[in-house]
Image (cartoon, rainbow, N blue to C red; front, side, top):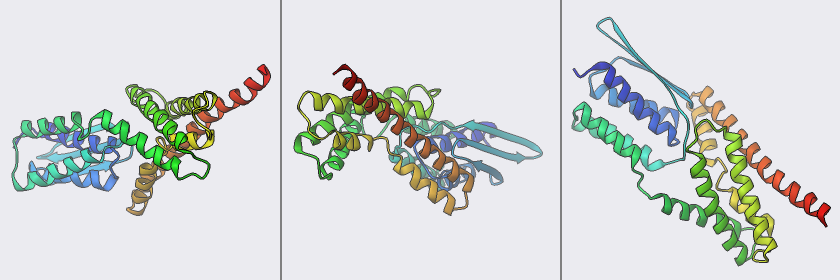
Length: 258
């Protein structure tokens, strides 16, 4: 059997990547158990929360444990799918431990879509949402797309700082969106500030997190579900603060200057 501690470490890394990418608890645990069994660890205990993974197993009286802190990043369903598929492929054709580690590293580093493609797709999605609003014009749709595109890159940059609080990060991006909307209105390009802001903040709305929260609760992972609901609330507060602060100074600040 391969080095047991290395197997445990690899199992935890697989679960970490899945959780960071937005996976449900039950799916990450199922994948970790499947990978562990492929390397001979039949008796393994895994306890997963939205923010932490605990893995332990006992072999011939020796206990092997790994605890890993998880910090959610950008949602990437392709990573979840590829790691899940890797675990199923291992059942059919086992790989050497080092080869499996390399595959996990490749999955973590390489995204199926480039950052530029994701940014453009996000901008398009936000623009389409703004288009559905009654007060939105075609110029507002264009403004929403541009503002959302810039906001995505700000969000991607802030994600490089894991110590930055979730509320602060979302508030900063929301401020960028609100400032962009104001700039569009003041320059005469856009007409509806509300439509541009509402469309832009769709970039930040934690839809996947909320969906996974309720799925976790329904699957019995109540604590993880509650954690994710609280995270979604924190994100919503951050969005409200960011937009509210900018609009407050725009309304009363310019009014005072006038």
